[in-house]
Image 1 (spheres, rainbow, N blue to C red):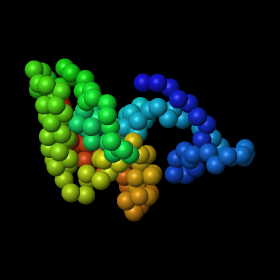
Image 2 (tube, rainbow, N blue to C red; image 1 turned 30 degrees about the vertical axis):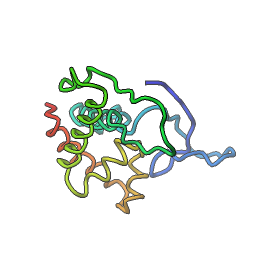
Image 3 (cartoon, rainbow, N blue to C red; image 1 turned 90 degrees about the horizontal axis):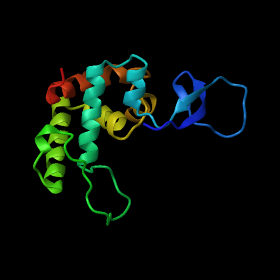
Image 4 (cartoon, rainbow, N blue to C red; image 1 turned 60 degrees about the vertical axis):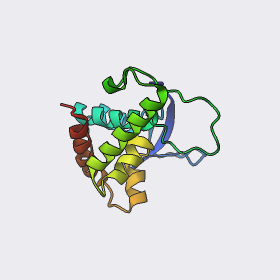
Length: 160
């Protein structure tokens, strides 16, 4: 993981993106190269099991190449091999399809209402405060809902 440190204003909702100009407010140094799941895990808000579940879901999301594209992609499909035990001996296309099936299964296992926060935080890399605001949830409710969703994902991936 690369370190990309930036200074952000510290608010009651968490670090805020800089609006330009210098102010005498409290600030914090943030590693923007760190995922929200890794950030929560590093600060003791997520157990190893929940962190591993989130990383497995994100890895399948990326392997299945489900991220939105602005235009047509002309580059060949690149899927790292050997990381998922069930993918050995499969062609790159088959690995991509297997990852898509695992991703869909994990999101289905999370259940209705929980897949939104999973997608926003784990796959899209949104912070919890941004996800809560976008979903119209009360402040500080996202962590509990994310933990419930990650528990179900961990069960799906059989993470002990």
